[in-house]
Length: 46
Image (cartoon, rainbow, N blue to C red):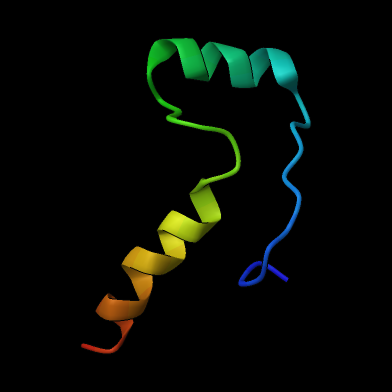
């Protein structure tokens, strides 16, 4: 499911907004894809 196109929704919009304004979030729903893209090349070196 996470490797294909999927819908992202905010479970707690207030906390998400706080993280966004604090600069911890670039855009909503991009975290899993970025984690996978960084992890896969590193995993092949193990």
